[in-house]
Image (tube, rainbow, N blue to C red; front, side, top):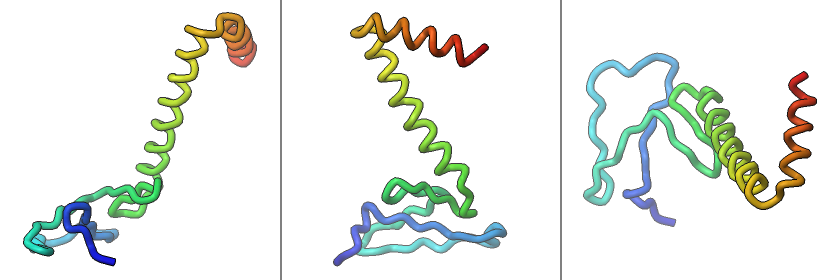
Length: 93
């Protein structure tokens, strides 16, 4: 297995901020990028190991899929659209 320098990112994980300049790291004549947040296998990590970026990413992805489904239903299934409207009205009472 070899490291792909184009896809590789560097993240310093610490509770306190780094002091001083961060030295550049070069791998196979490519300058590595420092990042504060990265995603791998569907999990978003940040440099403080908080779950907020991961939850925000999952929520945004879910909302996008729901909006696509609602748009599809409203255009192609008018009877189901009415049922969803009445169901949503019932939930908000």
